[in-house]
Length: 485
Image (cartoon, rainbow, N blue to C red; front, side, top):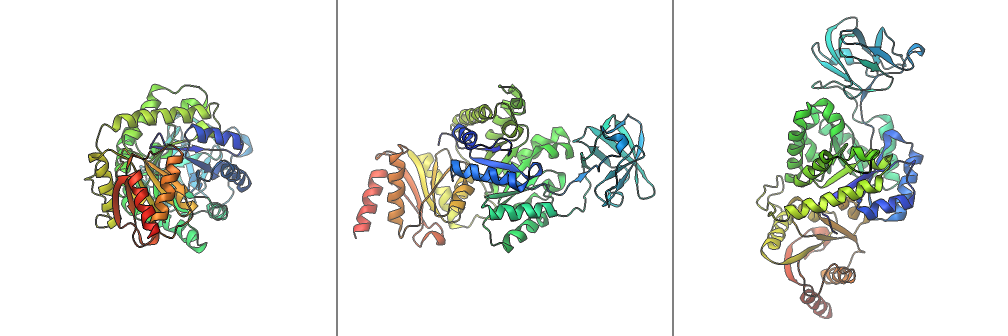
């Protein structure tokens, strides 16, 4: 494992051949993202099947489309959109029917828009390309003035910054895709437009009914989600900072501050955090990124995120493998630089300060600072020990032996964790011998290397209970002698 920051690549069913996925995996990809907004369950199934053919270590994340407001379809006279100019006045109405928009009235697919949106609010259409100011309310419609001209096209997204909209947490379409994800053993649901903990709990309820181990990643895409991040973190497995819609909802100059705030919140809460949207956007059509894009990726890695994500670059770009390779090179370079600095072992890990596992993880990372330790080795049933170690952002690799394949893949998005699947063993000595031989066979460890081992005296299900430090050779001898006894 030559980089600690993980890479998530978005894959489309139009280009998901096994050879293509293998090339991305060999270039440094750790997880595949599937965007359910742009494909059918059949298309998503083909992606999952091809990913599993390449490796069972690759995590699979599927996005829900999420609750969102959009412009309805257009009347026949405006199939190419409705042109508007600065200063024009128009009506916005909500509908739950198949009403079509026209020059006289733009319909939105949210019936309560007039009730929820106050006079003085700003309405942004098509990611902010069209900006409207709400001047008045009249006959169940919003009277708006156009602030910048353009063309309002059918089905375009609508954002209303700073206004809480009472949309359902899970749409019918999302529920179908969540059921599909559970049936196909997908590892993560990335739920879009999470605003409060109830949005996460709605997805959890579906997962609980199906008795599934799938985990939820909450996509933070609006001000409400940022403001409620603490209660969201209490309920979610991880966070994706989705800077596309977030950049529409929040002034652009605030995005770097919000990103840093969310990353720190996740690290303190030992929750994986993914940074997404337009990281190497130029590489959709060009073989080289801009210097600004390289700096954006580097900034995220300097902030110690768990993972960085590619979207259009790998889903439909002309240089997908090159994009992953570029991101991996940047990660390695920045991690070499940050290795000069000590991990923050004094960090206040909220909610877990008194847990034995957290204290052992802290001690293991500290040992790597004071001793010439080559790696940390753990075994885990739930992945908790691995996530705690990842939170400290140590410089040494963590080899996590997992007794469930789903846990192995879930740790694929955690910083610095190299997860390995192993059939459950009857005792600690068997686990340790198996993993040491495995790592030596692959030339990842040598007999003389010093390693830290975190284990449990009462079985993997009871959690970690001790820490041991020794050379690979001495640990092997000890384990062999214990087995003979």
